Every structure is written in C-alpha cells, then in structure tokens.
Image 1 (tube, helix red, strand yellow):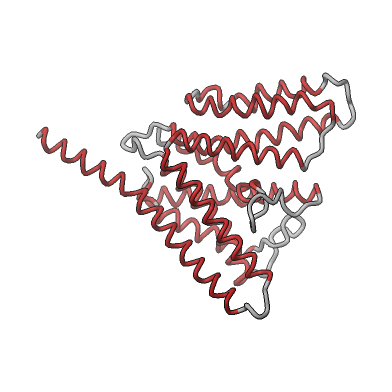
Image 2 (spheres, rainbow, N blue to C red):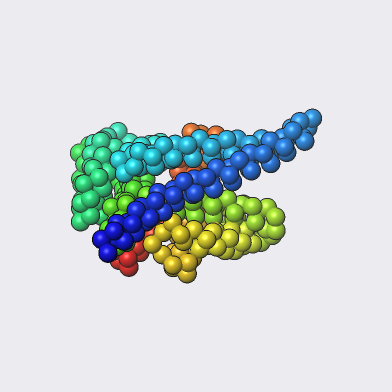
Length: 325
C-alpha cells in the first residue's frame, strides 16, 4: 500500500512537471508558425513594402521577446513572477502618469505612489498578506494620496488631479498585482502548479485580443464602439471571445477546473478584458493619443499590451479564491 502511494505521488509529480513543458512548447510552435507566415508575406511583398505586414512582423518579434521574458520568470518561479510584474507595474504607472498631466503640488502624492504603494503592494503579495494587499490601495492609498496633494495648497483641478493618481495606482499596480497573487492560492490537489494559472490567464486574455483583431479583419462590418475604439467590430468581438473561450476550455488540463469550468472562467475574463480595453481606449481618446507609449515595438506601451489583463486579473483571482480555495 505504501509503495503504491509513493508510486502515485511520483506519477503525479512527473505529470505536473510535464504540463509547463507542453504548454510552452505549444506557445513556441504557434509563434514559430506565425513567424514563418509573416516572413513569407514580407518576402512576397519585398518589392512593394506594406506597412501592415511590417507592423505584423514587428508584433510577432516582440511576442517572441515577451514570451522569453515570461518564460525566464516562469523558470525562476514565484519570486521571478512577482519581480516581473512589479517591474511591469512600474513601467505601466510611469506611462499612465506621464500622459495624465499633474502639477508640482502633486509631488508628494506621486512619490508615495511610486516609492511606497507600489513596492509595498508587491511585498504584501510576496508575504501572502491577503487581508492587506486587497485593501492597501483601494482604501489606505485612496485616503493618503488626496491628503498629500493638499500639502501645496493648490486647488486648481484638485479633484481631477487626485483621481488621476488614484486611478493610475488602481489599474497599474492593484489590478496587475493580482496576476502573481494567483501563485498564493492554496487549491486542494493543485499544490505546486499555480504558475500555470498565470499562464492560463495571460494566454487566454491575450489570445482574445489577437483573435478579435483577426476576426474583425476577416469579417468585421459593424463597429461596436466607434467613438472609443474605431477598429473594434461586433463580428470581431463575438468571434474573438468565442474562439478564446474555446481555447480556455482546451487548456483545462493545466488548471484545477473541468473543461466546462475552464470555458466559463475563460468567457468571464475575455469579457472583462474586452471592456477593460474599451475603458483604456476611452482614456486614450480623452488624452488625444493613440498609444500609451513606444516601449514594445509594434504594440505601443506596456498598458497597450496589458489593458485587458488589468481588468481580467482581479476578477479571475477572486473567482478562484472564493470557489476553489
């Protein structure tokens, strides 16, 4: 009996270790196929350069870099993921604050946002202090930042300025920090594999963005929100969300979910990701810009790539915590 139990543990361990290998091999295969197609298209149009194809090639090359960075953090483990997303939050918050002008009197509030709230939030995630990292920014930072903004006694657009810093922290730090926080969840029978939940979230939501774009180009006719995002169509939305939901169901084997549960969660995070993209597009339109930055070639800034993940991550985290933990 003891030998049988030990054998079962070994089999389960080997199977758990094979999941990341299979997953990243699949991602590499998809990127390789996309690279071959894009390079073939570039070769076919070498005499008449196309901006669309050039952008496609740049995007795929950037995806390779992002996949390698995430893969390296994945290999390091929990600490690697927390450090990676802390840096992502730093760059994202910098983009947000840069494009939402503040005044000199906001100096102390910005100082607290970058050098107090951001590192403290990720330290709390690292120590798994759930009760505080879910309250630090939406409660304590939201009370502290307006107080710090009064130091200069500048009332010019005070409410708007304060809201910018608060909203930047919420999107760029609080929401994004829920991605590595997935590693902390203690799911019975799923111990040691939580990194795969991060992979599931990122792959499904990012695939939804790509598939919505592809479906929109193939058969998009009716714009879904022309004033917010002139490139999003009803057909692209339906096709992209449905395809990414099917992908989520197909990836159930890397999760603690059944195929139907994986499909349901994929649908929820795809919808949250879509509306997150609309919200961030509305902010960009308000600021009169096309992209949040130019850090990622072909993609714009960090927030351009993670706008959907920002809105999907907290919902995904809490659904799992309340139903599976």
